Image (cartoon, rainbow, N blue to C red; front, side, top):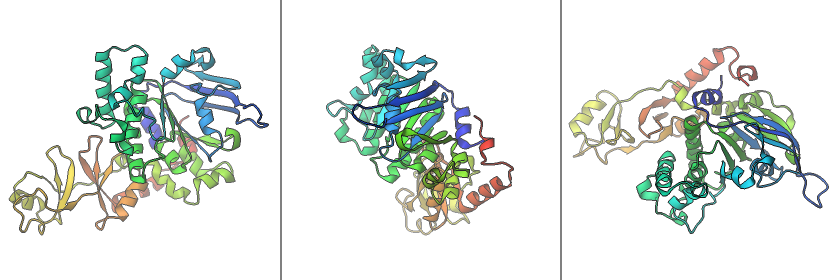
Length: 393
């Protein structure tokens, strides 16, 4: 079973199924349809990624789910109901929507942005306030710090987190995400992807995610729909199946010549057996830190909440009065990071070691090159691992 399948099985599914049946969109004056007879089933509680080149119709296809764009023909069924028979405002209030650059209302505070849909559907103030704080905590932002800020006072990554919080505020079963992380830097993008996977593991929503980045699709998707012109489906399958057996040359082009390397994105760091190291808290006496290092090369300094800060060596403590401030910064990886991201981090560390943190940011263990090599070697000895037939429908 792939990691994405494990993730879906582990989550308490709160999403609902979506079925597109010959969905088509024609615009007046255009000879060819923008979307031509797309049919696919999106299972409840999974992340389905629509990936394809710019202008292929993937965003149009997604927007027909919540009727921001009305289909010309065909049927969109949500949890067994024809979406065309649901009042469009009611339909949209029951579907979360997150876009690139967050799409926050600039004149509203963070709290008011998040409260938008709950307010529209009639929640009382007390319930809205509690839900706002809950959503901020869920996406890793302190309510006391960010509740009263305006979008202009946030970084790009923080804006995207607020955008996701707003989309989830009314607890919709479906979340539509239109290239939500495309406008942030690569490091922040990776962190936001990890955050989305963490949230999905907790919430089990049905997420339809649009991107043109195949690496992002492989990392996030339980299933990937590779689209061609007019949203024609070139291949719709689990990431492992697409990487192992692309349907045609176009799909193979998306997968790239490094398709084998992309297989590393199908496994999370949390699936690897982690190592351990000596640790010491930043408020510990220097003598305690020296004892912790012992015969080892170094120890990891943690803050009082157990989050990693720095590496220290005996030399760092030679003239130090306290552990606080001594040593060099420790590079960290989220437990949700992929093996590919882990490998990149290890290659950039002179000790080929990375510190792994759990969902709460606390120290969870170490990963090394030997750890990854051993894990991959184990996968190669397991019969059938990574084949399409191993992935349940």
